[in-house]
Amino acid sequence: MVQTISDVLPIAATITGIIGSIAYFPQIYKIIKRKSVEDISIVTYSIWTLGTLVWLLYGIQIRNKPIIISNSIGLIGATAIITLYIKYKKNNH
Image 1: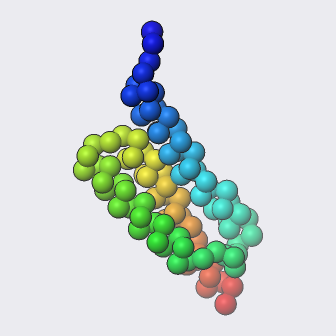
Image 2: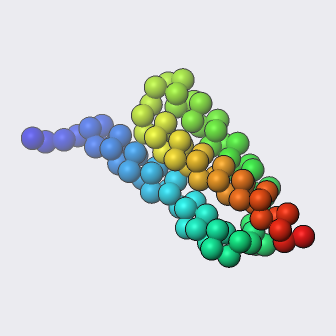
């Protein structure tokens, strides 16, 4: 069976989106292990979280599974980093 680019692209987009979204998790692990957010830019993560939320809402609106899946994972990761920032920033000052 020959697959066209339009058959493969949604799968590739989903996989790539998931890989990009799980990039938050090594940072989460590092924050938890060190109990420090000294080198984290809360502004950067806040902007990125807002953008991820907008993309997730857009994906839901157009019912696009690759956008929904990847941005759901990304939103979990970004929100976790912001939450950890709030938790550990108090401990570091």
